Image (tube, rainbow, N blue to C red; front, side, top):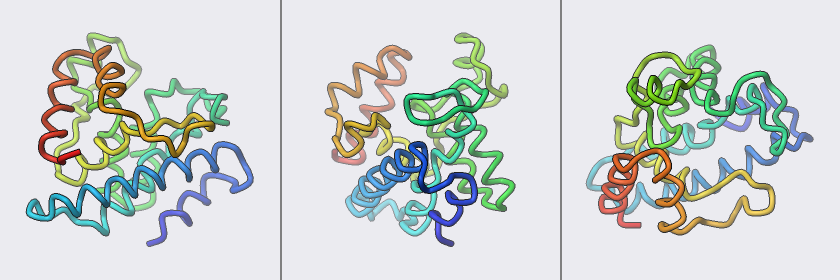
Length: 181
């Protein structure tokens, strides 16, 4: 399976959204594969990580995020579950869960209720080692076109995550220890 072929089914390659998505996906994938090599003892599936990391943000075009060339009708926080629906339609069930579970540091039903998020009422938290590696790797990169390849510092990531609760920072710090980055 070639992830870029799937992306091209939903994005026109000449668009801003496609170029940002592809650039972001590539740096996240590279970081995720580097981490997977560091934790070989946990037996991550690197082929799956490559495919799923490249596809993790496929749902962004369905959201309102004009700064990255996306003109959909949904709030950006919805891109995970929307990506899940797309990849389920492609028959990629495991990959679809990465889409849904990578948003934030993972979202619980409690998070969704407390913040009144327009999301399905279900836990969307990374479970497998592959999901965790991709979610973690994603936090190091933004989709800002002027800084797509610039890796964020741990301090900057923690500051962003802190807005969503101390438990999210705790989970991130646990991953820092596990993934040694």
